[in-house]
Length: 546
Ligand SMILES: Cc1cc2nc3c(=O)[nH]c(=O)nc-3n(C[C@H](O)[C@H](O)[C@H](O)COP(=O)(O)OP(=O)(O)OC[C@H]3O[C@@H](n4cnc5c(N)ncnc54)[C@H](O)[C@@H]3O)c2cc1C
Image (cartoon, rainbow, N blue to C red):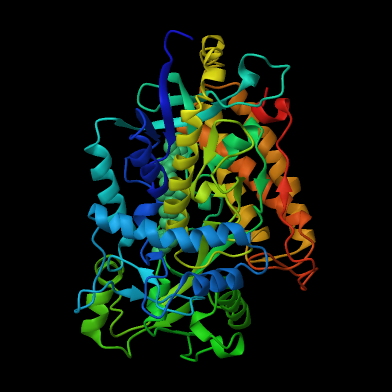
């Protein structure tokens, strides 16, 4: 083993719900290092408003949750994965409550269950309208109190370590750890681990208008793809229909729960329009609402539509949606109790990801992927609202259970003898900041191409045009990356360029319209219904840009 490397049983990349839940369980078995590239709580999890879907209501059951998830997923959900989600989700949420997590309750003390688009029942467990923030705070507190968990912030995972790094001619089969950049010192250390868990979240930053925080740059999918894992169903990117229309970055989300509460969508002349698009009106699944808004914007030539809740009791609005009410009032000067809120769709959730099995195993031995970075098959062609926090909880737990069995069988010992062969990071060239200014334009270009050509409505012509341009940008970025010392900016740019390519290639290969993927050339949904888009990993040279 090289002298500066660190060795640990568990390396978790990411400190959102999935990484933290896994770490808390894994600490029962050994030491855990969590690396996270920003502040510990800077994760999409902290931004979640609506809540966690779980069939806990008296009139509800997992079968109904299952049916709603399948309906939203447009015939592409993996039914086995969904069945796991809806059944095990109930126990996982109860465990969280037993651990001490406080959710909003009704006056009679029962859990208050919200309703969101696509759900036939009130089923969303929440902490007012800042559920994610409350969960993140709670889990971080639990992790801080656990002596076996070390959380290293400001540390960015660059590339997974596989056979490629010490036996370049051999096909990579195992994951040995990851090269980690310390953002303040610029030092790069290999952290070797028996089990590596990618919990690095989504990739909303590939679009310019997004609800996702700056950390959501698709690093997990990009790293896994470079290392030899397949990416699945990456063409399905969910656009949340109702982000606040403003210049705020990330876009401020107006939770779906507000529509569940009775908010109406209207155009600038005050007319409702959802009745033209779907019988479920404002509570139709997100893809339908987002397309309806997109189409109204085109019909009226306007930049936004409005969400109006001013007909509801103002005190109730303030009590049930304190985060939204206060943020709109204080930051944007909008009083939602008396005036409509301007909204537009924004990129929100990556439904595809690194292909995994039901235990979170990827194509590389000893590498797991959980949460938004993974594709378990749960979301199919469109995620049902509030199913993603649930997915993080459930599949983090399943990964832990799988690893527990493998550790009993000492499977990890097989690869430990190779640790000594793992080289230190190859330092590469010196950063040229003058050139960086040129490359930073590539980021804007990637995001604009994605918005203009790979957004809510797609066509073959637009996608082909997007791919030609992205391929060029990708080459420039890799050329710069190969000649420079890694920084977070260049690493994120490299990952976003690859994610853009993966999304476009996936979109081009699906010759139909389904769920979130709407192709003007192929407006119909094709049979057979369950056909995943699988993108095979790149060849070595392309992967590492060498
Ligand atoms: C505004 C908003 C509202 C939402 N509302 C809901 C909701 O109500 N219900 C619901 O179910 N879902 C909701 N979602 C989606 C949900 O929040 C996310 O899907 C979920 O939190 C993802 O959890 P995660 O653990 O997979 O990733 P995240 O919570 O995004 O955490 C990823 C972590 O990985 C770290 N990371 C990333 N790359 C690297 C790297 N290279 N090296 C080191 N660390 C890295 C990040 O810093 C972060 O700590 C919402 C999302 C947003 C943005």
